[in-house]
Length: 151
Ligand SMILES: C[S@@+](CC[C@H](N)C(=O)[O-])C[C@H]1O[C@@H](n2cnc3c(N)ncnc32)[C@H](O)[C@@H]1O
Image (tube, rainbow, N blue to C red; front, side, top):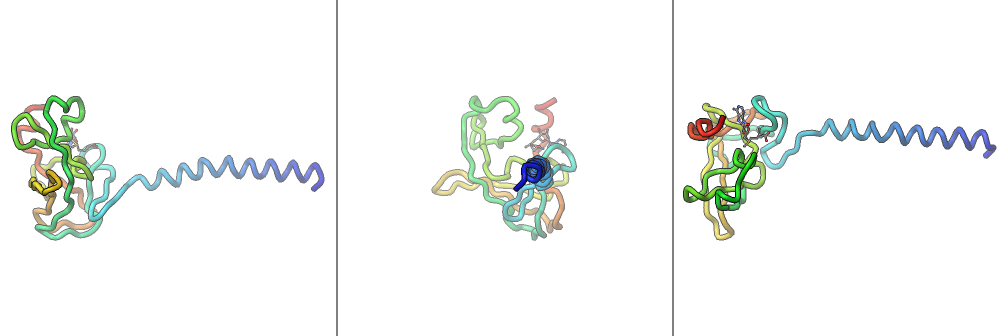
């Protein structure tokens, strides 16, 4: 390779790499939603992130079974207080894993949940209250207390 050709090849390679990094970042940014099973996490219609049906879900179907950690209320503070569920007594809170803590509130919910205690520990089971179309945001009712105890 002559020195001129060598310079052109090097500059081209560097420009290509420089363009590839932002292009990769843009492409990666496009895939913001994440999903597992019937649930996709995406920008909510009411606030921040929310859970959406990634396929049609039938009334009564289990949407997600979340392993949950029961902890003392004194161990939960700050913003985390807005994400945990009530535990088996007044001073206990349930930290649900999986996507369970990302469902938003609606007074007309399409999802409800119950607690189940398996030999492996507490679980929070989320299920459909009615047939849900693919793409609908999934909501459970946080209850009146939830809103009156917060600003
Ligand atoms: C359990 S988190 C739900 C996920 C949350 N949207 C996020 O982006 O991480 C509870 C928080 O979501 C917001 N939220 C849930 N339902 C809402 C609603 N219907 N209207 C306004 N904000 C809501 C409130 O800020 C609340 O503190």
